[in-house]
Amino acid sequence: MRQSPIDYGRAPAADEFEIIIFGPGYGEAIAVHLGAARWILVDSCVAAGASAPVSADYLKHIGVPAECVQAVVASHWHDDHVRGMSQLAAMFPAAKFYFPAVFADNEARAFLSAYSGEACSGLSRGTGELYRSLMSREMSIAVKSRVEIIENRALEPAVRVVAFSPTDAAFFQFLARIFEYVPRVNQSLPIGHAPAISPNLSSIVLHVDLGSDALLLGADLERHEAGWDAVVADAWCRGKVQAGLIKLAHHGSASGDHPDMWGNLAVEKPLALLSPFNNGRHRLPTSTDVTRILTRASKAFITSRSSNKAQIPADQLKRLQDMCTNIAPVNAGFGAVRVRRRVNADEWRVETFGSAEELRTPSRRAA
Amino acid sequence: MSTTAVVALANISTESAPALAGEISLRIRPRGGTAAASGSSVEGAASSCSGSDFEVVSPMPIPLPSGAGVLDSKPIQIWEGVVLATDPERAVMDVRLNAKLGKLPEHTAIISFEWVHDQDRELVKPGAVFYLTVFRKLSRGSIQNSQEIRFRRLPSWSNADIRRLQTAADALASRMIVPDAPEPN
Image (cartoon, rainbow over all chains, first blue to last red; front, side, top):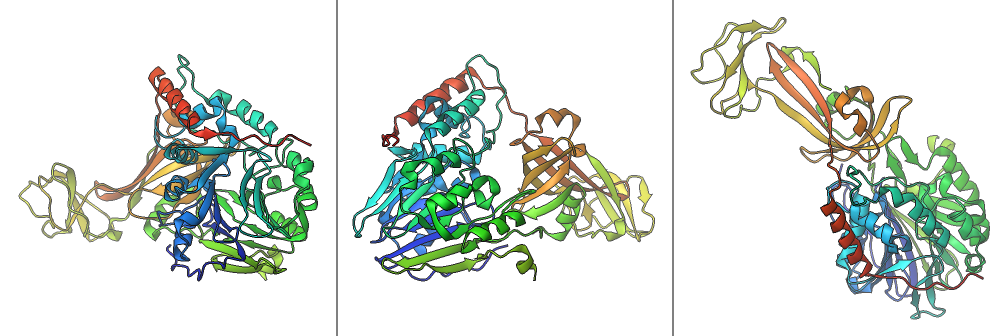
């Protein structure tokens, strides 16, 4: 079902920070204005019925020239975070392209190449998008914990973007897990599909230091000794400005949460943003997740909520129901949450677009 | 695995798409009336359809595209599916479905293993690609609904494939910078 185009209004002022998160139901993309017309784009998704990545559409809509984008970051290789990424990589040639350092290893590069779609199409859209993105650029930069991505000295104090992950331990965990999926000469292994590697330890978590406040963009990092446990225990990470605004990791799931993330890396009761994950029976956030998030955040906003109403013509749906149960649309509605704040202001101003809404406890929502 | 359901003919419109040249099709006509389809073919054995005001003359070759009134077999929808997860205990798979005919949003669903052909059972793994085709055809006085799931069977990696992917991996290496990070405190 196509929704009417969203009017996003004007671009932020030079002295106005902005973070906007987009989500169609399955997918996530983020754009951050670091001030002085400098932007970074993190991850990519495409709205239902559209072909261009939502972040590129957004910047075009509010009148931001392509050369204002300084960095495009692929936080990880999962399909719901990289749809349209190869287009972004091509549309912003002046921007630097960043990817998780786990793919800098020879085995991981062979893994990416094997599941790029060159040998057999449709094996994994995620690995294919990341592969095409990297091959379309002359040079891309591998990111791991403690690497600085951007320093914007146009503002005083300077705005700094650094990576909190992936950690060195995650690097080796990832290699150990993909080893068996890399085809070898004379092995006669059937061509397969890119495996789901869980938990996600290879995501790039970004910290954006705005001076008196900070953003924490959690990507899809999950709880593990090499994941959130390592990040929250790292004195270097804990020494950064605590975040007043968090993009929750892994769609608000319990596995993407860590109690010390709230205590060590964020201020008390920060503002939280998230996108949902609708994929079969696996839907996030769950009602338990919502309750947990709302006890820890001052307020939380989600780009869209899930819907179980199939969007298929009645005659086709009836036939499909002969074979299938739980038929539900992947993208239940596209939405975006935008948060802006003047450099010297104290509070963030939240706007919702499309299907986005404030997260409510299940009982309040039902009422 | 294919299955068939019988649908009362009276519910089906005779305004179906014309048959393609060279296909075997069926003709339908009001009971006791003249055949709706044009052409000079000889009618085959008629089979009546109880509870209907129509009878079907079946089967007969239709040599050229014909006019209204001819029903034939056609896919209603072809779904390209990807297995998201399997649940061996409940013998079901979570799938994502993408319509190949027309423009429909992606959907997710749950399908029982019972619908998977025995020859394809070993292929049911997360990430596997299949095609779910839903047909409607008219046969011997009744409308048949049928559907089939077939999994895509992939070849083995050839040594040439592996050499090519190693070349691709090397090409990626030449396009990557790995900056140093500060030492741990």
